[in-house]
Length: 286
Image (cartoon, rainbow, N blue to C red; front, top):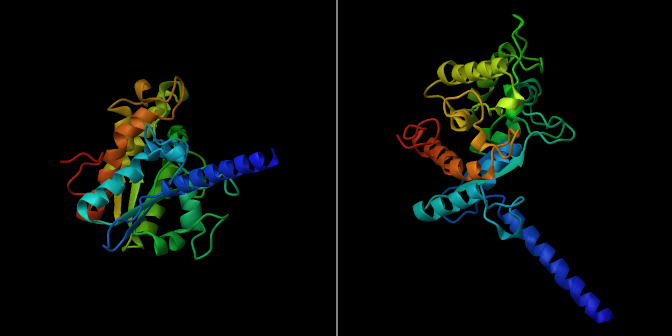
């Protein structure tokens, strides 16, 4: 009996180790070419993970399930002889910084607390650009709960106001442009479902996204956009109900993530290979 229990424990431990290896493996796209690697990092929270894993990715790729973005890049590398190595991480983490990835937080970590040392255990741009050729970042849907302006923009304020967002983005652009050898891809704002935001908040979000696309983003620099907002709303003001994970939930569904993951991946590759000129902002071929 003792020998049997020991054998069962050994088998169980081996399975756990196997699942751990599969999780680590699926957390990035492995190199399959002798070409010079292009290292890509995707900084995100839960909405980003929906797109990363797609419909069959499981929980962080456990049980051998294939996550959408790493799988897409592995297949692209094999077909094209490229060596695009993409990985992902939560940014910022829940502790010690806090689960906030809004314009203020990127400004706070990357501009206000720039340098060679991490801020509250979060990497600065000086640290990230030393390791990655492409840096992708985004905001989660509470970014669209935008309050009315006060007439006194303050980039150091965490209040979600259009005037503050613009001031923070303007400072971020200067910072991003100071790393000309790194490409940055920013998702446009994630939208709420209709039950989670007022119409005025939604109108302000659309105005902010339009400003980012038409005024803030400049051609021929090192900053590019992926228009996640347009994919979620399709010309409306809110995340379309059929794209929601469930009623009243502003997270998109796994089915939606599966559908848009190739557009996200295509946009990344187009930025690397063509400076984003052969796809539109949604990642569709022109």
